[in-house]
Length: 170
Image 1 (cartoon, rainbow, N blue to C red):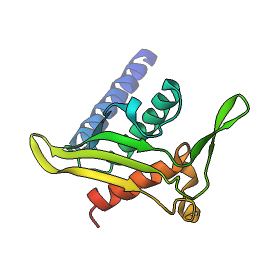
Image 2: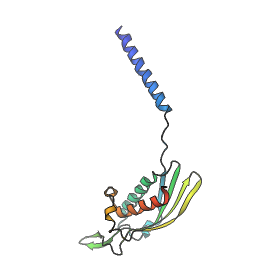
Image 3: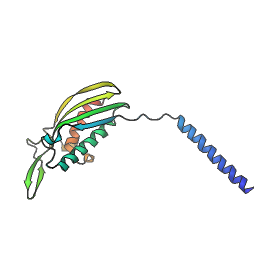
Image 4: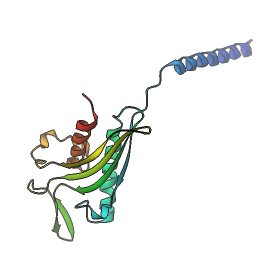
């Protein structure tokens, strides 16, 4: 008798799981967000992306990941193809002992990013163009600087403002 009772419980558990799974399968699946393909054009010729290849690669990886994060706001099926054509990081590198230090003065050292972009939905081009982004008052706007931006906050804010103006519909 005991064996039959366990078998009945096991069978009803499986039946419940099948019913639950069937119900979940009938629920609408949220659409996947948009994406981004980011590249760069001759980063060794960029105005200021860091001194060493490691610094350049790290900065490009940081900005690429940020653009990919922004692109998740795009509707499903849309892809932003973005190519950095020049980057000039905020501040200036000044010699300090045995290494360089980035100093932000708020004078002629604002962040600047030049890029080309294409917004696609499948084979269709929805928008394309170039953008020359700069924030001459980058140190004056620190109250609006999101602390969650982490590395390269001024450059990320510049990209975020451009992305919102260009692609986010109010």
